Amino acid sequence: MIAAMMTAANLGARVTGWGFAIFTVGSLAWSLLGVSTGQTNLLATNVFLTFINLVGVWRWLGRQRAYEDGGKSAEAASRRSRHPNLFTATGISGMPVKTADGRTVGKAVEALVACETGNVSYVVVASAGIGGIAERLRAVAHEDIRFACEHMQLVCDLDRFEALPPLNDSDWPAAPARARGSTSL
Image (cartoon, rainbow, N blue to C red; front, side, top):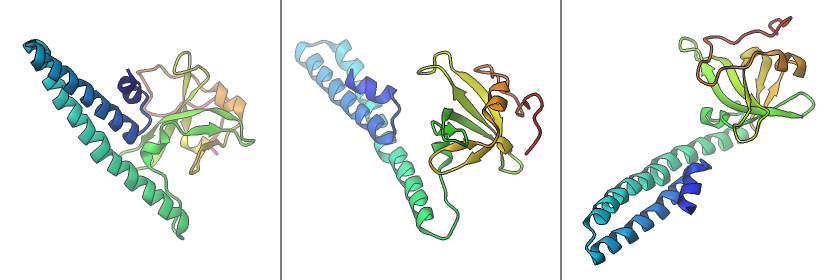
């Protein structure tokens, strides 16, 4: 159960990887029980699960952890240099979105990038709701949001943000809708 919570929580490569490590210990224990009691089905199932769990350990504690560490080191190095501050694109997901006065209105879910230019077209922001239940997704145009290292800040006012039409969970637009009466900044 602990391993399942660790992997389901998606708290980063290390937590997920250690969840797979705990799963591996469990599947090895069940394999031993299968051998000692002659239960070939239990043994076969858990040998297979051990293999899958070891792939998870390699993937999350090996490769994905290295990617996260590399991104974090680039972020830290950029803050100590004269080059522009960086943040990882994967870091956008879950980043708080705040108003100019510092109130949190939601979190970034995804950024949609134009293939031809590499520029962000819009950021999907989730607001309201708890744990994804009853949340509202809105497409906030790049011009209406400012990227910072630790959060995103709405450039538009809260009323304009709330006037944006909610997105359907699985059918996002090719371009962000403009709130009534809005103009490009």
